[in-house]
Length: 165
Image (cartoon, rainbow, N blue to C red; front, side, top):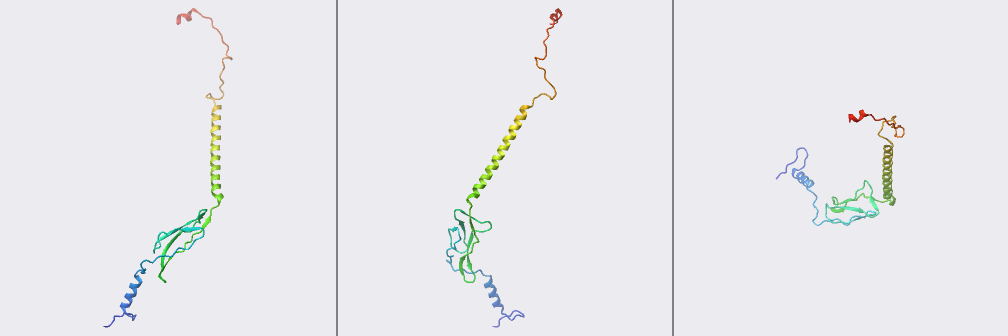
């Protein structure tokens, strides 16, 4: 039986087909392959629920520390294609110490701002009340005569006044 060659290459078609199939097939993992214990990260703990391939776990920063912005707490159990062994990806997590004054300073700053706002609103309200209490309903420039300033005069009574009534 003669094998067919690809034109101009001198390569057997069956060999090329087998090579392509091997490259396209996913890497076979031995059943039961698991990852070892994940590496330790400074100031962080991890509780692994599943050590199997493709499982994902997260590190948690210890009390008094927080995750630095831009870093990830995620790690994944993956297969090294060269050695066919399972391992956890290396997280780039950095846990940084929480400044004890940072939360207090934020609270003090907010409290001071709120207090300043409330005092300012109270002063404005008192000023408005004072101005309104000083205003009268009379137009400016018109003085009201008091009864003491107007002399009382008595007009003599006539008979004509009695008949009109």
